[in-house]
Every structure is written in C-alpha cells, then in structure tokens.
Picture 1 (tube, rainbow, N blue to C red):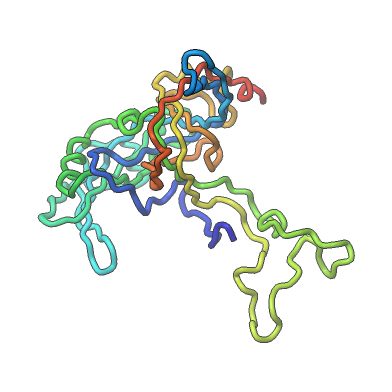
Picture 2: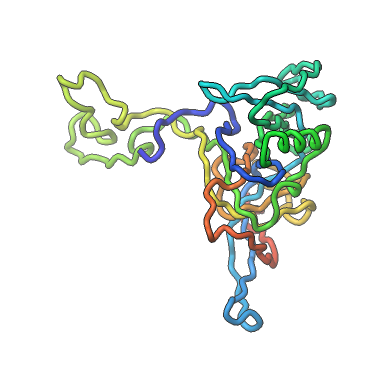
Length: 315
C-alpha cells in the first residue's frame, strides 16, 4: 500500500494542487517533454585538496525538451468557505491557432476584479516546434511568486504576450520537483502489481493470488486492501529534489546519431535532470520549485566534461 488509492489519471499531464510559497517575483513551474535517458561524465573536485585531486564520475540523467511556453490568461481566485474559487479570467489578446483544436476560449476580455486573494497564470505549450506527432497544446496553470497578490498580478501582466523559456525560471544546479504520469502497463495480476508471494504447487485453486480474500460472515465483502488484479500504471506521481545538471539552448550538443529512440531529434532548449523521471518518452513533464527545502539543497553548478550518447545509439 505504498501508493493508495490506485487511481488512473484522466489526462496525460499532471494536475497541480499546491505551489511553493516564495517572495521572489517569478513563475514557479515549467512544462516540457521527456526525451529519454543518457549519462554524463561529471568532474568532481575534492574539497580538501581542490588543486590536486580531481576525479570523474558517470551520472545518469534524463533529457527533457523544453520549447517556450506562452501565456493564455490571468486567473483570479477568491477565498471562500469551500476553498479558493475562480472569480475572473483575463484572456490574452493573441494566442496560437492550434489552441482552438483543444478549447474555444472567448476573446472577450474580462474585467479585473476589485478584490482577489490569489493570482495564477494559465500557459500552454507549443508541441508544433518539436518533432512530436501531436499538435494540440497542453494547458497548465502555473503558480506565481510574490509577497502579495498585487505583486503576482504585476508579474503576470509583464509576462502576457511573451514567450517564456526554461532559462528564465530555473538555472543550472537548482533543485526541482517533477510531476508526471507513469507508463501504462495494462491489466496485471496481484503478483506483479502488489508483490504477492507465489504459493506452492499444492495450493488450492490458484498459485498467483492472495491466500485469503477476507472473512466469510462478519465482513460480507472483499475489502479494498486485498490484493486484486487490475490495470497497472498511468498514475500521477511526484518526485522530489531532482537536481538540474544542465540547461542548454543548443540541441546539437545532445542529439544522438539517428535521433533518440521513440522520440527523434531535440529541436529546442533542453534540461538534463539527475536520475530518472516517471513516464515514457514524449510524455509531458511539469517541473516546479521544490516543496521540501533542506540545508543540503544549495545551488551548486556541476562541471560536466562531456555527454555520452552511446547507449542511445543502440536500437
């Protein structure tokens, strides 16, 4: 029961419920597309003898392509007894024609409310700038940083009708959180799904199943805690404290010969995240400011010697 309940996602990109509170005036997130994994050769310098001892370390990284995002609307919230409620939207004057394939936003500009408690920015992606087959943009609500709602509104107005790049929000060495939808694995049994031990060959009825489904009389039903077969994967997962190893604008630095498997060539800016990220290739990944801040989360710019793509050239 590490992740419970097992709820399958309704969309292929994550739903945002909370944002890190900060006084800095900036966007708190970005959305990109997962390319795949490779590894880099990172140079480490011994802090005791920084001028003498230098050693190298191979580090696995995940490549995320990050085409620029565009603002769609400024959204105003008002506190109520049942949580925050949307009170008004100010839609951008210009937006891409591909956006009409997903929704039909009104071109009428809503008036700015006199009272509001929070401001967020609706942005959309530009998949047409990548090699992905889908052309419909993803629409995501991004939180804003600021001391008060008025500062957030000033920041949102300054970003309207402008392209926002990943380098405008994050920097190399920063710690971020990733939110994504895991890979769907189809219908699976309780052995693979829940790790139930396979029973001996003399077991009654079944071997790859739980030993008991519960009581016969008092319970009267099968409890939700009992391991049962169902569809596996396609669930939202949040991974905390992922370090950005590099933010680059030149895709030729990382493109493998013949392109990446199940993705193709990177055509925009990119991010190298240390370690793995949930989800298959081409899936949208949302990067956000970290929610778990600690003493060891200082910004340290790693020194990368070179990027190895030998593993990505194999088919």
